[in-house]
Image 1 (cartoon, helix red, strand yellow):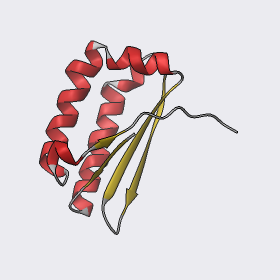
Image 2 (cartoon, one colour):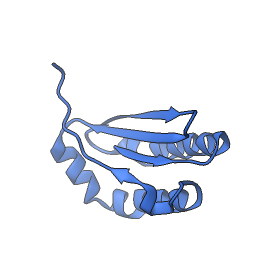
Image 3 (cartoon, helix red, strand yellow):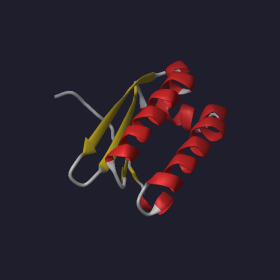
Image 4 (spheres, one colour):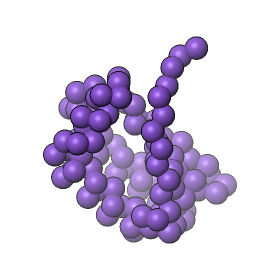
Length: 101
C-alpha cells in the first residue's frame, strides 16, 4: 500500500494514467500479481494505491526482481517527485497480509 497527497484533480488524473500504463507495461506479467486498487479522496487529494499479490513470497520475489528495480522504482520516483506533496518524503508505504474472514 502506498499513500501520498496530490495537489489537484489534474494530478490525480495523471496518476491514474501512469498507474494504468505501469500495470499494462510492467506488472501484468509478474508471477503472482493479482491486481491494483486505487482510492482517492477528492476533498484532500489523498491518493492510495494497493497492489495485490497471491502470496508474500510472490511480492518479495517481485520486489527483488529487475522488473521492480529497473522499471517500477524509477517510474515511481519520477512521478512522485513531480506531483506528490512533499515529494518522495511524502509517501507512506506499508505491506499488509490480507485474509478473507
